[in-house]
Amino acid sequence: MNKTRGDLTQGSLLRHLLQLAVPITFGYILQDAFNVVDMIFVGRLGPAAIAAVGISGNLLRLIAVFSLGISTGAGIMVAQYLGARNHAQAGHVAMQAILLAFFFAIGIGIVGYPLAEVGLRAVRTTDPEVIRLGTTYMHIILVGISTMFLSMTLGSIFRAGGDAVTPMIVLILSTLINITLDPLLIFGLWKFPKLGVAGSAYATLIGRGVGVLILLFLCFSGRAPISLRHVRLRADLVEMLDILRLGIYSSMQGFWRHLSRLGFLWVIGPYGKYAVAAYTICMRLRILVMNPGFGIANAVAPVVGQNLGANQIERAEKSARMGNILGTTVMAGIGVLFLVFPQMFIQIFSNDSEVIKIGSVYLQYLSLTFGFIAFSLVLGKALNGAGDTFSPMIITLAAQMGVGLGLVMLLSHFIGLKGVWLGIALSNTVQGAAMWLWYRTGRWKTIKIIKNGSENPTRKAV
Image (tube, rainbow, N blue to C red; front, side, top):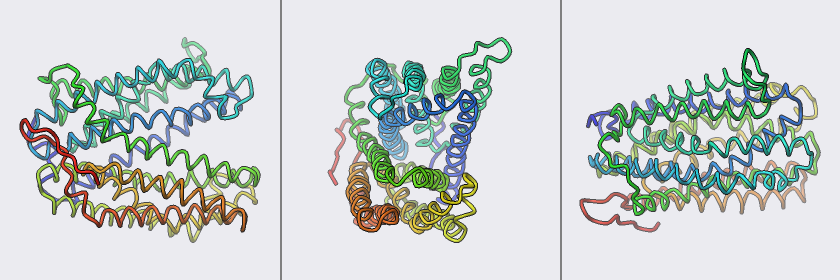
């Protein structure tokens, strides 16, 4: 490995953050755009196909939280070892993360395959055609679920080495392959078989699989920030457990977020289809706003990690502060637009006057909290980069499931639908404020993750 490549411990912090954040953000936007295009193709097959892919997608996102854990743990350890100039150990950790992702995915595929239909019925899916199509879709994805796990893990390893451009380019190629194959396999164009919903699943796996093969080739050929050319291909259970210990809380954090969204939807459901539609549209707008926040947050984590590995604590703290200001400015700025022109943004998705009326109110409540959401995203990832994945998980659990869902249920009982919007807004505010307060304690600066020589890793609970 070129020792200066991807070195985040020297040079301009702002430049490092932007060089990482811009391609990461573009990747999130590209993925959202692909999901829209994919749904357009699937939509031509009818409402049952849309429902099958939509419900299956939500179930698969729950599975994806395990991949998030492995990729997060790997990214933290690789970044800190690179910062400490221990490139051999960084390569060893990367190899263990790849093996762990592969084996974990195989296990999930084996367990999940026979339970696919059970999962669809568990979310009150009763239409026989939706169950049939959804089961087929999930079976195909579960057989190739290792492509999802490896893609996320490899992307995290590259970013830990200071390279966010290569994963972005590979993602662009994977997405183009996916979009090209979608109509060919779904509708049977040219000499391709007409596979319907199954074609969408195969297109996803092929596109993602090509991306994984490219990233693996770069790693094993020595053209990546982490070279695996001379790393032994063997399992190290101790190192794998270290990765899982760090990553498990990130998985749980994602799980609580997703579960709280389902809880909010459960409360909103009785208010009727207009309220549900308004909530759905606003959540889509929220995701669009969070894309730059995610990009900046995921840029902060490796910068903090490498600098802590190099024992440059003040530089790590400065990078977190700079990233937080950048993320808050961008997201709060977009929030002002949503606050002043809510109807204009709702109308992008719906012309129904009732949906626009309800959605505009919620969007104004939500827009006031975008700055706090930025605090939660960026400072949460800064804590992750330091090796503290437990505290952000606890804060998310308390804010989303405790404060959020609790207030939504309570306030909706007394003041109706506005109580739902107020409860969600307050949960975002509490989560952001709590993340900032915990970050300010500075305990994350004392966490030790990396091994020094033959020493065992020292971990201080926070």
